[in-house]
Image (cartoon, rainbow, N blue to C red):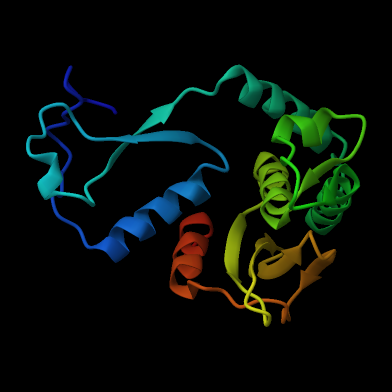
Length: 208
């Protein structure tokens, strides 16, 4: 944390010591979005006493990527390099097709890592979140604004998909279902549309 002392205390930062459970969960969901591009560790500062009185208190610090993440970054960059000269829409379709060519849906096996997906010679098992995270990672590397969205299907099964910003419009991409760049989506319902709107505003400010 910039300007922090040896105890991790930053005099320029306001430390909230109480927060609602809903706010705590929302903060953690924001971190899950950010971690498509950066890794964070949550912690409590060593000077914080009687931690039990603040069950929803959390701080975070940025972590350097480990070797597997660095290798995944290099692999992702080589994949993105194949799209040089393409339009944004063509890139999105390329990333969708690439991820689908690298994963087969299987919830009973240990899912492949990003490095497996990006560099393996055979398909690896995965579920919707693996499809979505790999797609989001590639879009992020290509500089395409992308938001992960989660929510229940009509059958009550929790599902994840993406929304990407292409040519001034947010479109839905569900790599698992092979639905690409559509403005209408009926498979599942966003469980937190306010958070989705917040993340979109962070990525593409409305007054930009």
